[in-house]
Amino acid sequence: MSTTIDGVLVTPLRVIPDERGWLMEILRCDDPHFSAFGQVYMTTAYPNVVKAWHYHRKQTDNFTCIHGMMKVALYDAREGSPTHGALMEVFIGEKNPALVTVPPGVYHGFKAIGNETAFFVSVPTLPFNYQEPDEFRLPPDSPEIPYDWGLLPGLRHG
Image (cartoon, rainbow, N blue to C red; front, side, top):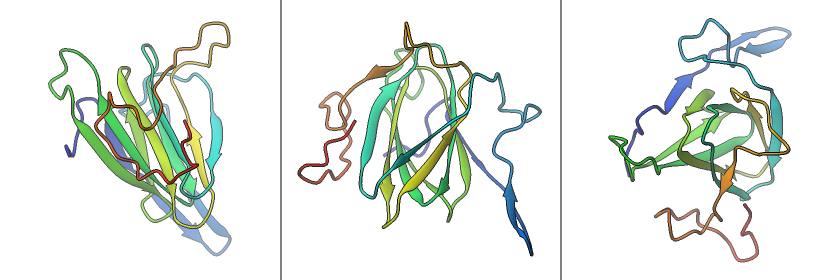
């Protein structure tokens, strides 16, 4: 499995703890990888649930896991990309705080790992368009992407 896909960035995030708790900046407008702001949203996944696959034609996704852990998988479906057909896997969350930046044309999804619900925060470059969604989906077990999520019977989520 490839360790990188052209245009995908995994940026370690710094946790700043003190006696009150901790702070972690996720994305700033002066970060070198910041391009635009569309919206901020949060989603969750219960343990072992997979939410995959999708890609965007216009927007770039920026996301992290703020609670729990998740396995993020990416597949480069872009014709003409130097990493076309490459797979990438990264583990992010409380034990590895990182921001994943995904350019248009790269399929991605995640699986909550461990025994607790994973909380996912996303800052895409465009707001969700309810009339014309910039979201193109495949099921997690699609033969078009050579990746095995280790799906359990009855847990075929997308």
